[in-house]
Image 1 (cartoon, rainbow, N blue to C red):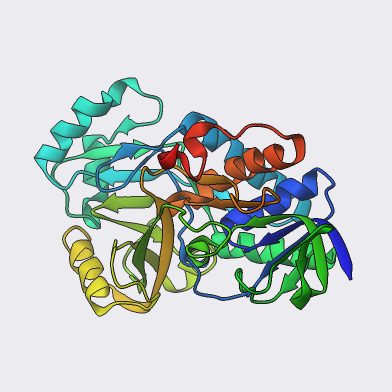
Image 2: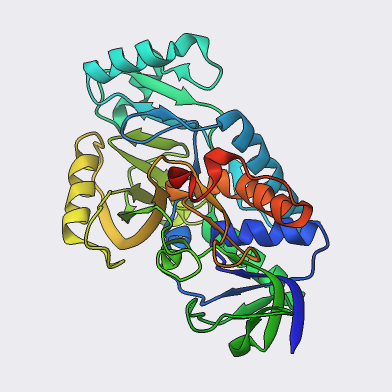
Length: 360
């Protein structure tokens, strides 16, 4: 029987960040994952931008979360000798004149360091590829995490240290409470602490029976556009981003996303979702393209767009990190640090992040 200090279930962006936080503190831990390839973390494009969403809202606590994420990914890159996170300017083109007026009124674009006015000269330069007459703004501090590369490199790192196990865990039947800790007979393992970081898979379990997770299923396309030359992230109703630095020079591949379906979650690509993305992209992309791949993922968000952290009402040795939505690349490192400090050092989790804050 193996005994560890902490067991982490789930190796998406949340669980991986928790694992690194434990590793950096020298904690004896193990992380387990079923190694599915269609999880939201692996489908995600890894965009880290200060202004996001259809409403173009400033990310909650951007000035705290962004530097923390930058330090985390730089540390992991140094530790693994791999590269997966880089600066990547994002541009948001206004879809109409009303959006232009609204955004200028909201942000006072010329006065904020996060957003810069998209000049007429840039608009002229981009007119070869994009159909836009209303201008836009640039986000120079935006970054891009290649999520699959980050997750795979991290998995191999923890495998080499005998800290990763491949298994599917039934939260209701495979976890037993004992005086010695949290027992998982299926893994022949006992842990003093258990952290659940499974995203949508943690929606229903006896340990957290009422987590207010708000699920959204999203489609993402991979397109081939041979005539398009682009290294930035472009937003205009949908976002378009180079798929990765290697393949773009070979086949000009780009990712396009994402849809927001709030019912009938099955994790399967939707023909309606594909049609929606293609129609929105054609509204502003001038060059022809072909869809070469279509995937979908279920993103676990929260009712107020803030992460969900805290201990189980059934047993305080069991904790959860969830509700990152489409901002896992930005928030996972900071939230993991907050949760690990709460567990190891008995620190309080801010009330605005507690998973049951709506009930308090």
